[in-house]
Image (cartoon, rainbow, N blue to C red; front, top):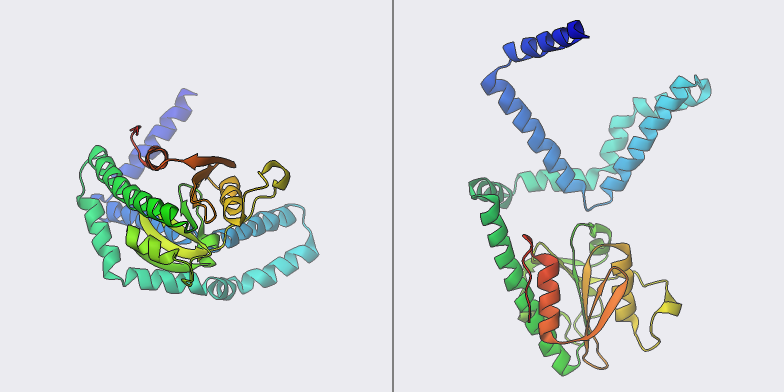
Length: 285
């Protein structure tokens, strides 16, 4: 036992004795950045589903080799011989997006800002300030639309990526303002029937179609399509959805398959702040 530990220690020492502080450190940092970049790029697209399929393919290939299934091995090898071409064809949109992102000045500017920021506490404070600005804009728009009996559906993405929902709408990528939200949901506007998606305090997309709840027997009969879509979205993700009723002007919030109805402006603001802010801050009316 002691000799095994000694051999392990000698191996560790031998690894670090040949470690190039500059070259190897840069190599590790580059690979870490590359992996992070690829995962961030694919996380909210269909590519992540395809990646899971490739993982299942690899596991199946390992099993057929272990079991020596000759016909299956032959078929797998035909696919593997052309795997590079297949991957390029499958991931063409993601590869194009990656190259465009790398060539975009905003990517490098954002990276520089992230590296130059201070402590985690300072980042949390800056983020929470953005949350307050975003929530205040949404609440102002919701209150105005409530008074005018204009229907609205606003989704606040959290940890569950909503890439598939976003793909069905129109990408906007703009700062959240009450004026923009009111223009989006104005009756007759091209995107007013869909949902607006807010990601990282930005208006990411609008005109998105949400899945309806399947619990029709458990939902109040007086609720319309917007409320059923809000409940359905909250059942399939950890997002919070704000609904403004077109018929009554009442404001409601859906989360975790539950719908909080007839909320005041202050209750909506408090609920959204507690949901979005980090660091354990709580806000009252």
